[in-house]
Amino acid sequence: MAEHDTNAPPPFELGDVSPSTPTAPAFMDLQHPDYAYMFGFLQADGHLAQGTGHKGRLTVEISVRDIAVLRAFQRLTPYNSSITERVRATNFSEKHHSAIWTLCDQEARATVNGLGLPYGRKSRRIAPPRVEFSRRDYLRGVIDADGSVGHTGQGLPFVSLTTASAAVGAYLCRYAKAVTGSARQIGRNARDGIYNVVYTKEAAVQLAGHLYYPGCLSLTRKQTAATALASWERPADMPVRSPGRRWKPWEDRALLAQDDAETAAAELGRSAASCSVRLWRLKTGKVRRPEGGPAGA
Image (tube, rainbow, N blue to C red; front, side, top):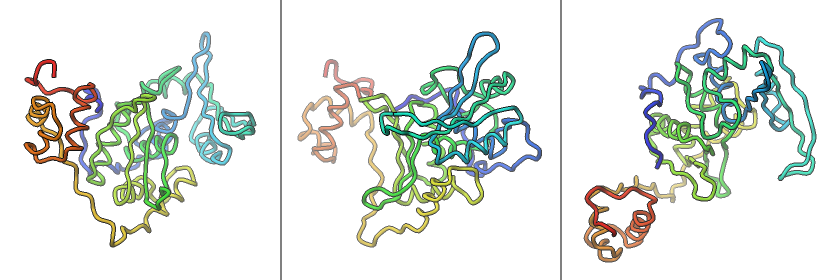
């Protein structure tokens, strides 16, 4: 589980999730929905390169099928920028056709950098803005760039985000809980150190409907997918899973003292499988041991 970020934006009331739209916004005024979305997208899928002297560039390269969002960025930017296309071989396709938006203006780059888009490698360093911003639009931008919306192979609705940033992953969890009531605890994937945050079923329907509201700036294909989720209804024969029971420090201490899943299961009123997994996590450091636990257990 990610540690709490002491510099994270302050908690918010659910009534704050849809701030009013100011008139005549300045470039990258993040209280404006379109700029908040644009900034979230840039943090997740943009690249800010710093050249020699005052040279540098901000670029976003995406599939040409999504070129419309780059044209929207160009319209929102009161500085000269360009959109080009190219076809190249990638790990996924021998002829990947992409579109690239490029912005070189130093003043514009300084603005987005000051808001929290670092130069160079950034995936672990990005975080929600430290200024007031339109939260749902920012998160929709992040999900459009690094997430997915749709139906699983079993036909279940889902909304997911893949990110290397603990701050962004944790913020989505906080926000989604306020909107849907569904809690998530994030942890890095052991293979590549990436966070995978996934919402399914009713939580996905609620979150998608909230983030992808009518008329919002978004990738057309994901807006279509989000709209399609609204028609999903839980089958009558699909049980509702009760919230998981969290482990308390005294339970961890008892589990470590017993050092046997079967024995501890009877004492704690949990399944042997649950105790076995928890004991493994405690012993391997996947979760923090409770204070006062058995030494060397």
